[in-house]
Image 1 (spheres, rainbow, N blue to C red):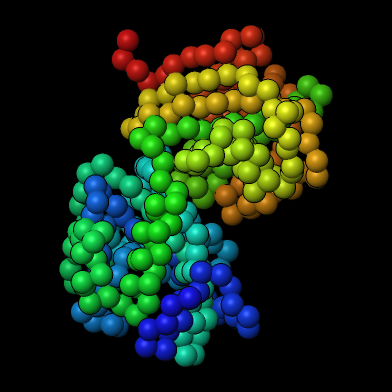
Image 2 (cartoon, rainbow, N blue to C red; image 1 turned 120 degrees about the vertical axis):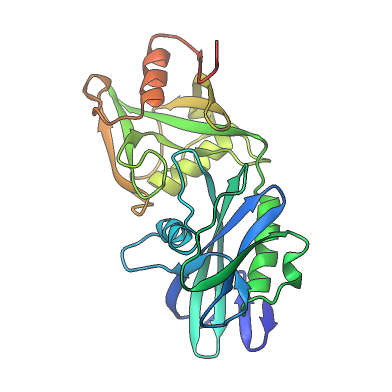
Length: 295
């Protein structure tokens, strides 16, 4: 816990914490520089990252993307590398609130279009940001951002794990929403494998976080590998599983509109193409393919 000028910043929820609002922030990083915006009205002249209140019925991730567009004119595309870095619990004299932290990594600096709330933008090195006159609590949040970023850094190639969960002749599909990536399309329970984590461990974690079920590594059977190039390199690893513990439950309704079993011959038309192809190939005994490479 940190404390500056009657502001307390906690890494874990303290006793008696009653949040009145939730705030979503985005740390836009290019190279080793982060985008900061200078306030034009309240807290005039002070600096902070794009951030704002999470509205009713809105996920923190959706709020962060909306605020980034509204405050800096930066829109994400389907392949943007956008990560959640956790949250802080902030206590000011008259209000408690939750501060959700997100990171957007870009390969080049985008054009910044400021909202009327801001008067200037600046790309600042990770080392130099603490020298700016920052908004109240922003320094503690930024230092935590750097620590979280170190703990969750991925290599230049994304390793993604996918669960082909089977019940009789049906496969569990996941309808994406509010993620900024293939929203409105069906995929599989899946996720990025973090550094220091095996593919099976990452998939077990994602199954618990997304579907509320417990998997055992011995029940995960490798089915398929896709080496895919988009605006980054991806290694997609698919595992089949027919055994799990717990009731399948949508644990992330802000990101998932539905979890539903389908027989492959009745897959919905709005299923992500490369995922459908991987499932079909695996069913035919194929183990590997490539996508997005110039032949």
